[in-house]
Each structure stands twice: as structure tokens, then as C-alpha cells.
Length: 448
Ligand code: TRP
Image 1 (cartoon, rainbow, N blue to C red):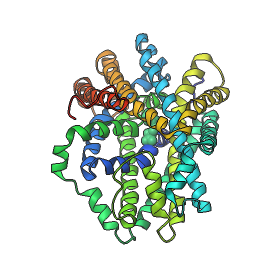
Image 2: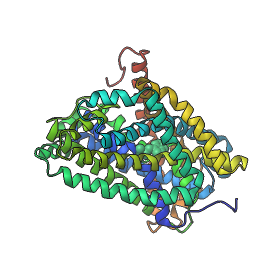
Image 3: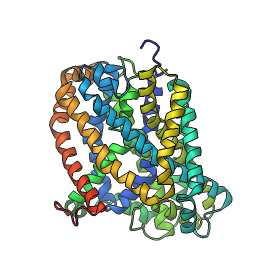
Image 4: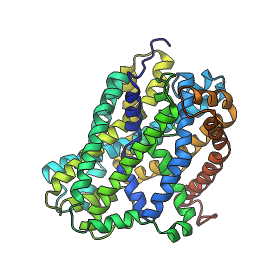
């Protein structure tokens, strides 16, 4: 595969990975997960999950990708363990399903950009959400969002993904930072900060079983782990890059964007609504924020800025989700990437149609991804890294790294023992919650 593209620079790779990581997960779901899981208490557990579980798994994907220089499926075979390709296959499938509903939410964002311009959500925020979240308009917006995603992926790794994320990631930061400054001037913002930033140790201790699974799930999702995105992206990387250094940069920047989103969302909600909405459902972010924007002086402009940030973040993530199946099919069949991206993107768009017609179906896709596919995929990857290809992968981590081989030995043992135990527990609780929601189980058996 001598004609394989590579990133033109290390910064290009970091920004593309940050672009993948920073998405709806940071800005749409993180503040509202925080709100529905005890505020600052959730924040603490989430930060621990990102650092202690997410970061080591990310390094695991990096070593698989860079060592093999292959897409997420072929990577396992090229390392000498063909039977593990099924794990990559699971990733391709999961990216497919995730993109199908992710793009529908991306379509909602497009409708809210339109709504900010026309003033459509002023007045009755709930009615606006109902009108754009399910139905023909939603299908159309979903199609537009997928079209944008396909166009970028079709252009390729350097001309499409690298170039797009180089523009989008700095724009997200600047706009989000500006919004955070602006909302800090609102009366009542201080209460929002207090809620967000004062963890109550009692709440953490009392709800650990309820907080840990969503925090771990959120950590995986926000770092784009499990589905082979980071395998695919690091496969275009040179041997002289330090993976621990790049990984830390990506984790830090991604976390900063999530934190920044909280600095926008919480002051807005406390200043306008006086409290945070009690349920963190899919629509809460949109209705609560649009409701608040329609009451702030200049709120439509803030709203426009906010939803444009959300769109950029969503797009730079959706391209990574489409890249996984595209690079697999293109590497495998030798087809050109343009028709491949187009064909696969059209298929994803079709799979997403039911979620664009019914927010309940969207909730199901979301729950299956969060509670089942994501922890399962990450569990398999960590077992592969820790127990199957362990020696060659630990050696790969040392290449280009100034962290020393002590770092890679600690990392390896961590991935062998701590991570599988943590994910195993999360997975069981996740499956239980799916069964309860499906009505198969009347009530949780463990830790209800
Ligand atoms: N990380 C993105 C977000 O926070 C979503 C995402 C992109 C993702 N690619 C992924 C999640 C791969 C899991 C796996 O919105």
C-alpha cells in the first residue's frame, strides 16, 4: 500500500483527531449528562474516566493503527491475528449505526441555524423542536448533513479531512470562547458556575453506581474510541511521532471544549430559566437553550453562534465516522474513495431515516450504541492490546516517545487488568439498563 495517503503534518493529525473527538458529545450531550447526573459530581467522575480509562484506550488504538498502517478491520490481520478482524468489523458496523442517528441530530442543528436566522424558535421553543425533530423536514435536513459529510470524506484524508478540520477546530474554540465570555455578563450566571463547579462529595459517594456507567460511556464516546476511528487516523501517522504526547494533546483539547460548553450552557440556563431542566433527554438541549436564547437580549445572535459551533463540531466528527467504513471498503476493494464514500454515505442516510421520523427510535439507536456497542467494542480492543498483540504493541508505543519504556509497561498492565474490569462492569450495567427499558426486566437486579 505504497500509495496510501499520510497526514501532511503532526498538527494535521492532532486536529483531525480532535475534530473527531469534539462533537455533539461534548457540546450537546456533556452538559446535559452533567445536569441529569448531579452536576459537578458527575464532572469529577467524568474527568477521572477520561484520564484513567479513555486515554489508555486511545493509546491502544493508536498503536494498532500506526503499527499496522491499515484500516480498522485489516489492522488486526496485518498484525498477525486475522480472527480478531471481527472486532474491527464490529467497529465498522457500529460507526455505521452511530452515524445514522448522529447525522439526524446534525440535521436538527441545521434547522436551529435556520431558526436563529428566521427567528423560528422564538416564542414557542417546544413547538419548534417538535416541528424539526421528526418528520419530512428532519429527513431532508439529515440528507443535507450527510451530503456535507460525504463531500468532505470523498475529497480524501489530506484534502478533505485534514483541511476541513484545520479550519473547523480553531473556529470552534474561538466561537465557543466568545460565547462563554458573553454569557458571563448575564445576571444569574454565577449560580450556573456554582452548580457546575462545586462537587458534593456526598452526591458522588451515594450515587457511584449511577454515575460511573454514563461517565465511562461518555468518556469513550467523546474520545471517539471503540469504532476504529483512532485506528484509522493513526494509520496515516509517521513512526517519529510521540503517541503519548499526541494522545495527551487530543484528550486535553477535547476536554477543554466540553468544559467550555458547560461554561456556556449552565450560566445561560441559570440566568434565564433559573434552574436546570430535570430530564436530560435528546431534545432538552435544544428546547432549553432555544427557549433561553429567545429571552436574552441579542439571544438570536448568541443562538446562531452556538448552533454554528455545534454544526462544525458535528461535521468534524461525522466525517470520522464515515471514514472508518470508507477506508475499509476502499482499501479492500481498490475502489476509488469518492464513489465509495458516496455509496456508503447514501446507505447510512437510509439507515438513519427511521430515526428522523421518530425521536423514540433515535433514542433506541443511541441507547444501543452507548450501553452495548461502545463498551463491547472498547472491551475487545483492550483485551486485544493487553493480552494478544501485547509485546509488539507495547514496543510500538515506545517509538518516537520520550516517555520511556517504564511508561509503556505501566500502560500495558493497566490495559490488561484495570480497563477490562472497569468496562466489564460498565457493560453489565449498560445491558441491564437496556433490558429494563425494553421491558424484559421489570427492575434492575444489581445496583438499582
Ligand atoms: N466523539 C464524537 C462526539 O463527541 C462522536 C464520535 C465521532 C464518535 N467518532 C466516533 C463516537 C467514534 C464513538 C466512536 O460527538
